[in-house]
Amino acid sequence: MFLGIDIGTSSVKAVLTGADGTVMSVASRACAVSHPHPLWSEQEPEDWVAAAIAAVDELADRHPGAVATVAGIGFSGQMHGAVLLGRDGRVLRPAILWNDGRSYRQCAALEAALPDFRAISGNIAMPGFTAPKLLWVAEEEPELFAETAKVLLPKAYVRWRLTGTMVEEMSDASGTLWLDVARRDWSDALLGAGRLSRAHMPELAEGSAPVARLSAEFTRRWGMGTPPVVAGGAGDCAASAVGLGAIAPGDGFLSLGTSGVVWQTTDRFLPNPAMAVHAFCHALPGVWHQMGVMLSSAASLAWAASTLGTPEAELLAPLGDAVDGPAPVAFLPYLSGERTPHNNATVRGLFAGLSAETGRNTLVQAVLEGVAFAARDNLLALGEGGVVPSSLDLAGGGSRSRLWARICADALGLTIHRIEDGEVGAALGAAHLGRMAATGEEPSAVCRKPRRLESFTPDPARAEAYTRAWLRWRRLYPLAKEFAS
Image 1 (cartoon, rainbow, N blue to C red):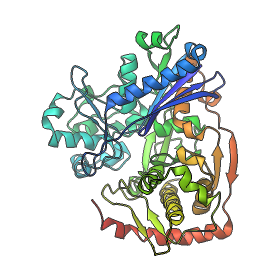
Image 2 (cartoon, rainbow, N blue to C red; image 1 turned 60 degrees about the horizontal axis):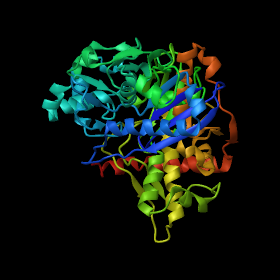
Image 3 (tube, helix red, strand yellow; image 1 turned 45 degrees about the vertical axis):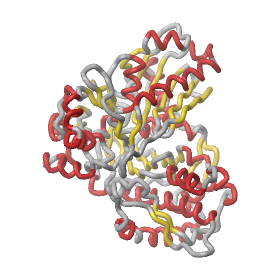
Image 4 (tube, rainbow, N blue to C red; image 1 turned 90 degrees about the vertical axis):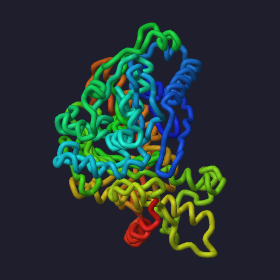
């Protein structure tokens, strides 16, 4: 048996898989996000640890015999978050998250400090990444910065708490702006631009490599006879790719999680920072990927549900499984700013085209379509540096909706596949990495593509209408910038 633990933003998931990689059981615990000031987004690292322990406790209560035989564990997690530790290992402040926009001014300073910043990191300096967060701390909280001995990403912090080992792997490290992505090593030049050094960083490893063993305390707690091997793991997107079998060049998927991702696996480092495309290491040796990122994907639907005081399922139910065409209302899903292709932390979302007749169903449809249109922007950005895929697997919480899948197919002009276990892709991928670390198996033997439940091909008439609607939707971005925070 193998265990995958995903440190997400809204929840922590634990997935128990069998020897053949199938999902046996899933447990999760919710996590709260704090927004103490405009543009700020923070979480308490201790909450992740408590949630991870509680989720595995639940699996151990449900399946004590299976959990007792777990041989390998993998961790995945939300990327870019900054956990600052003092010399005694104490957390110095709440973690600054991936969707925190406070450090947008520090981004320009980072790039100005190093002329070949983008060439080494492969990416634009964005406030969501880790390096500008630390520069913000250096400038705004200098006493805390001076106390900082180590900086860990979310999953690395939880793994340290459960194993006693500080280590990071290549996919998550790529999102710090401290990694030389082509060389798969920390960059002294990038670190120096942010007033840091290698001493502040954990050791690096590949995601499928064994890096630690579960501590004796938790081995006893969960009834395991032998401490399981713990893998390097992956950032949530790379972990999802492992879970979806997107490990060969050209493989791609669309994730509608809290944030949204359009992914494409590559056989080499292919940066395209001009379009705010992320070029990162994959969690497997010798493989990289390109990624377009939307900061508010399923988060947009969650916001609509909260604002309208109606659960998401009840919002979607009246719309059924299909719509006749684009809604007369347009929605820009920039609730937390946007990355690809705009790299704008302060832009904000908007509705356009409202009338006295506009009802709740129209607003909800517009939200779904706005995210799909943002995904099309991402796909266009990826296409500038590579080959556009002909189809995409759909992952993340949004993959539950057949309607959203159909809208994405028509809006993107691609075949969209709903897949088995699409909602637990990151935790499943983490479990696969734990398996490879424990058994030494090759990725091709473990990372098999999931069963496709159904496929949605674009309807020609609707796809043409959605293209016209997307072109009109794109013209709203300059207006949205006028409402920047």
